[in-house]
Structures are given as structure tokens and as C-alpha cells.
Image 1 (tube, rainbow, N blue to C red):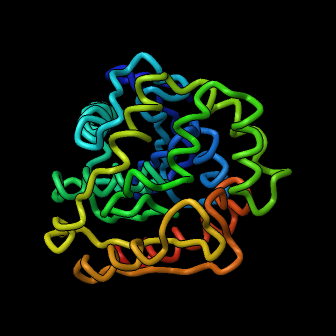
Image 2: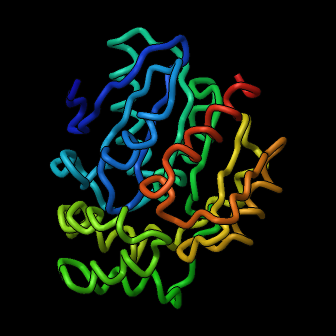
Length: 255
């Protein structure tokens, strides 16, 4: 069932005693996380569009992590309060993973567990990151984005729809994240993480620096990492069943 809270579009899927809040990655819509949610059972799943994305394009989105996290936290709080769900687990994909880390650091008493799926590393990137700079320059360019999505895919036949959702991202959000927010580091705060955390990493991910992801996990007290050697950055579209299995396995031990 679709809803809107604080300008953020969200959907509800499934039923269960544990509530999962799922945040898609940069350029993606709720479709990315609902693909994974279809393979989850025993959970109540709330999937939100990021600000400036999908059906949340009217929500304020400057591409900066603190602002994105604050906007989404307000929406989540409204949804949780209205539905009486209580504490929830956060599942964030790529940029959604970095936002989820920010929310968990700022509101640890509200988050029962955190899962980052190919999460954007907490240390951020440098201005010389060619993959990020290439996407920044490709704003609104259908042909270039189509080739770029294929280039970061393991199975391009399953990821072609991502181009359409990328074209819907607002220009302020697009450049604000790729030329600004992506450079932000919150790695120094990770030792203070109080939420059980697991990163699901793809061995064929060519977008996020795996060494930096593993450094994140080492900094987080009790942090865990699952490395799936055959998965790439778009594993949520290519192998949602595998991603859902790992989410379920971790939450079964962490909650």
C-alpha cells in the first residue's frame, strides 16, 4: 500500500513481529528494495524512496548526508508513530546504507539492527573518483547512463530499468550527492556505533571501495561482514533472493 509522510513516499509489504525499514541506493526507487522484500518472510517491511528520487522528488534533497538522514528520520518517525511499530531494523543499499549509518549513529535507541547492502563506505571518496565523477557528468544523458549502468552490472539484462529511475532524480540531489555528499566522511564516528551492524559486500562491486567497506566493519564494535564473491553493486536487482537470505540470517542472530 503506498503512502506519503513528510514528502517521502513509502510502501508497506508483508507482516511479522519485526519491522524493517529499507532505503534504496542512489538513482534507484522503491522498486530496488521491493525486489528484495519479495524474498523476505516474517517481517513487516517499509520501503521509502530517498529524497529527490522516485515519488519523493518534492522532498528537500541537497545531497548531503546529514540533511538526507534528517529528512528520512522524520518520515520514518512519522510512519512508526502512526503505525505503533516501535523500534525497527534499518536496511540501506549503497547511498541508503550511508544514510542508515547516519541515522543509527544519531538515533541508536530507535534502531534495533543495521544492514548495509553494498553500502557506500563511511570514509567517502575523493574528487578524483572516476566512477563517481562520470555519473555526475552524465546527469540527464540517457545513452551515457545506459552504458554506465551496464558497466557496473554483472547481469545487465536485469538492471536496464535503473536508467529510468536515475533520470527521475532531481538535479540538485544528483550533483549535491555526487559532487558533494559523496566526499563526506563519517568513518571517525563508527567506533561509537551502538547498533548491531552487518555489511553485505559484493566481490564484483566496481562502485564502492571494498577495502574501505571492510575498514568500516573493523571500526564498528562487533561489526560483521559477508562477502559474496559473485555479486556486484546491483545485486539487489540481479540476485535479490541471495541478498534477502543474508539479511534474514543476520537479523535472526542480532534481534
